[in-house]
Length: 100
Image (tube, rainbow, N blue to C red):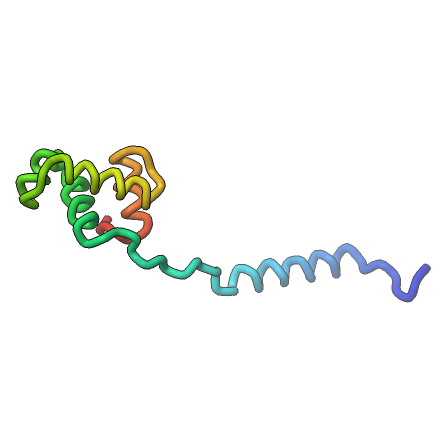
């Protein structure tokens, strides 16, 4: 045999148990918070959207053209990398851009 012999199964078990316990106690790594990728107007459109307002209603509330609102929505989708209103709202909440 080499310089050292294999460790006994009971010692191996104790070592693994200790490593697992230490891993559970260690603080979990979290990615740094991303800066808000949305402009203030995009954020406002997203907030209204999350409350169930239509593009027409948002346009009236914000004194914009419905086409401008749709442009904001497309940019929001692109920035959040989503394809639907539900995905945008979910992703925004996950990122902390909207309250739960």
